[in-house]
Length: 299
Image 1: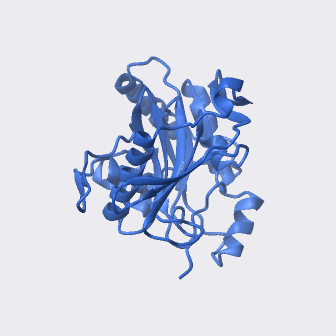
Image 2: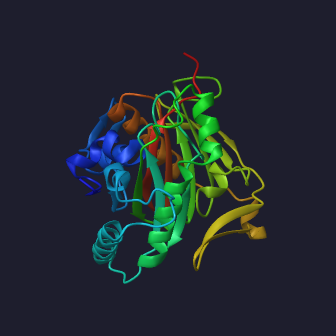
Image 3: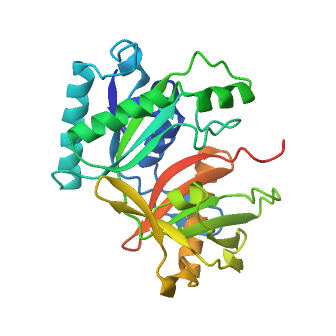
């Protein structure tokens, strides 16, 4: 099977689609989850997308990593057109992300090791981004990380996830446990204006919120002076200065902080492990963009 859509049972298989896509696929169709005594979480808003599986590239991607085969290109173009129909846009902006079989596991996250391309538009641009994602699997950076984790460097199988991109007003990285202290009674939220790349890439100091799980009270707020944020531009993204009037303003309200905490708690229960998630608000709707285990906790 060379291509599957998020939400299809086959897409839940990390050996086929990689950890990133498999987790999102499972959550795209997850039912309402009860969160102890705190209430109900009404499901997960996962943007639509599809995954070119590792099997698609086993034989059809050229050995010198210079070009996609015609069968893969045709498969990709057809799927992008179908996604455009779902998004009600002729050329929807998409996120093209590597999804390796050993990525987003409970011992190694591979965060930032493989490539991600945002706001990619058009069939040819998407094909080029897919090719670059595949090439990143054999980069020296990835090989060094594999060696550090005690994993073989010659067995990496990679899939590529193509997903509708959310042009976020606000983005957040949320931990269902405190990743520094290990306190499992707290949810930690890092948030900034615009796309989440400024947070995960470390180019901006985000606001930090602490939410107590037992009663969903925001117990601490650290409002940073936000210097920069990432925004979509034609052909990709750009880092820009945060407008002066917004730089010292809280990025999210307490209501949004509680909403993000509910999401993290629901995911922790759904997946069975402390969750590290990426999410975004667009027009006040919260979207789930990634979910993986917290790998920084001590055993």
